[in-house]
Image 1 (cartoon, rainbow, N blue to C red):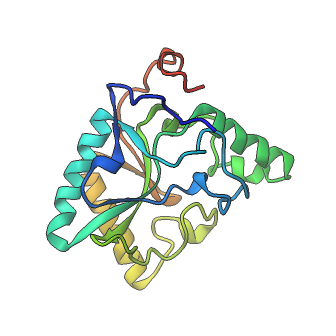
Image 2 (cartoon, rainbow, N blue to C red; image 1 turned 30 degrees about the vertical axis):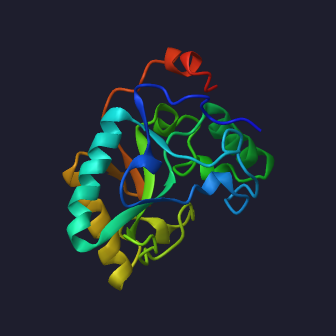
Length: 192
């Protein structure tokens, strides 16, 4: 089974190199909504475009004084993985997921979207009031109560302060607001 990248492109950062980041790449395991490892995730890893990674590192700097870090569930996503998600939805009569949950295209495919949660610096996750990639109303940013809602708000506050834009339906999803990279990027790095 191959890696997503044979070498990391110069404009992407391997998030495993950042301090206080724990990788829990959900599509590299069969316990995601499709029940299978997605194409391109045979070797778990997480990468972001350099500008988004710099902002993520600043967010980590804001969390460090509180003894916090981040758990990363997904970052760069190969186009073939996005296609596999859509194919699964269509094959399993779950086209409802294509209405606001699973996109036919994704900013993850350009390395400018990330799915994260809060974690203590030892890597143990804080309660977020629901699992990552749980496609239900309780996954909305405001869909939790008590400590979980406070944790969601704290995560959003730090990410927004560094320029990320949250997605109201998914407490874990944040996008870096830059123009998508040109499609020739996919071909140049063999990521289709």
